[in-house]
Length: 246
Image (cartoon, rainbow, N blue to C red):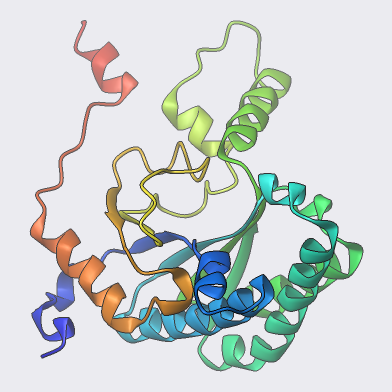
């Protein structure tokens, strides 16, 4: 019996973030080149997006390409950018038909001009879609995002202005969407890898042993099922702590 039948349908996380890991190792284990792992990984992305729509998940954030990934061999990076372009182009009608809004976070200006133009176009075409928001983290670094937010606060705020959690949150690239309730990482790795460091402060973590190309709908159901079994606890914000002093 599928785990899907055990899921409480009215307690689905509103926002799920995923660190998609293991493409290269998956390919190596099968005696294939690394890029075949990335191609198979795209199929897993399509499966997860379709499953998220089925589950009526409102926000799905995918760690698509980290800032650190630029250190990979130039040929691999070029092939990844080409794969990204073709994937967006091939799925544009799917985004429109299923009312998926596309957003991006990260240093998009690091990407090739063709990628930047493609992203601008797809963001514009889907901006009125409301069924689900798909957030693509590209050339993304959690530390860089926080540093940029602090610098913007320093630049824009008045002298001696108190920095609060709300103020920082408002200057992050994710300021218009809720924080993830569930963070999934694949391939058996148990680390955050500089992803959404601020936003996942109270997210539940699920570490899947499956490599990303093998990640399927059933594994997403399992992650949600495990999430629903946990008792979520939240700490106090700095504002709450300060208010308790008076």
